[in-house]
Image (cartoon, rainbow, N blue to C red):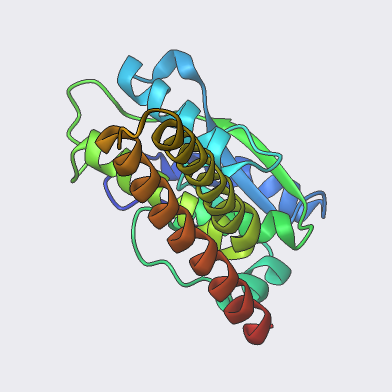
Length: 205
């Protein structure tokens, strides 16, 4: 069993999360917090992070979880995060490994109850950044190399416009030159990083 250490979860609901585990209906059971009990700013943040994390779960950020032996053994050897992004990393790895998910509706303490030890905005941004990093690490060519290539092509397009304008008018546009430099440099960096990380990822496997 996993619970957040800030008193937000009710230990009395532990038996509810264990039901799918004891019935061998799921490998991981995640507590589901209905939007109705959450403050508005938390709903927005959770919706964004749920979308970014993906997977067949309705509440990817809830720390109230039950895991069976198979899930524990798998995740113990693969988890690397030690911050607020651990829930997203756990969900993504379990989904990639085809573990079975279930969720059980739970209650959380909000309102005037002081549960969070971190600013919700910085918390959300930090988790989202970690999720993007996890996605990019798994498929660097798609999420880093491809955008880099597209950016580089845009730079080439502006370079062609720059040369055409110069040939026709003998006027050298500094604006086009800056766009060429920015897009081609950023594109080249992205493409190089994508290729490099792809090689590193394959070597790790």
